[in-house]
Length: 231
Image 1: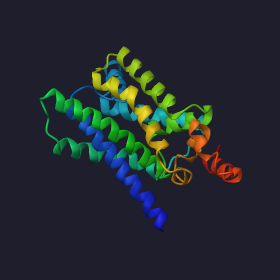
Image 2: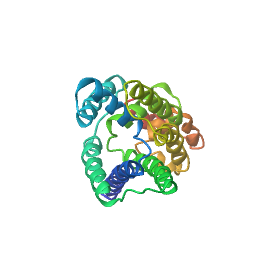
Image 3: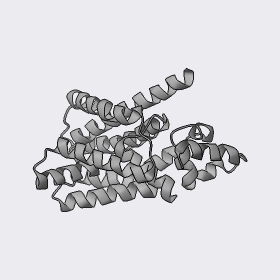
C-alpha cells in the first residue's frame, strides 16, 4: 500500500511539474518545444489545429510502441489529462515578463524542471506518455544512452517541424539539446536501489546507466527486471 502511494505521488508530482514547466516555457516566449514546433508545422500543411495535430501525432507515436513492445498504463492516460490541466493553470497563474534576463532564467528553469519531472513520473512505473515512451522503448531496444536517444528524437522532430514551417526560437534549441543530458544527469544521481525498482529499471539495464548495477552481483534480479519490462 505504501509503495503504491509513493508511486502515485511520484506520478502526480512529476506530471504536474511537467505541465507547469511547459507553461513557464510559453510565458518565457523564447520558443516552443520541438514537438510543438512539429505540431505547428504539421497544422500549416494539413489544416488541422495544433491541438488536433498533437493528438494525431500522439496516436501515431503510440502505434510505434508496438514493435518496441512498450506497455501503456494509467500514467499514459494521466499524462494527457494532468499535463493539460496543469499547463492551463500555469498559464493562468504566471505573468508574461518583458525583461530578457527574466525570460532567459524562466526558460532554463523550465527545461531543468521538465527533465526532473520526466524522471519522476516515468519512475513511478505506471506508464510513460506517448513521446517519452518512444524514448524509453528505443533505449531498451538499441542500448544507447538516454542522453543520445532523447537528443536525437528532439533534434529530428525539431528539424522536421522547422522544414514544415514551425516557429523555432533560442529556447527551442536549448530544450532540444539540453533535455536529454539533463534527464541522464538526474538518473545518474538517483540512488541505484531506487532506480532498480522504478520505471527506469529496464532503461538503466539497457543503456550505459547499467554500470550502476555492476556492483549488485545479482544477475537474477537484472533478469527479473528485464522480464517485467517485456524485454
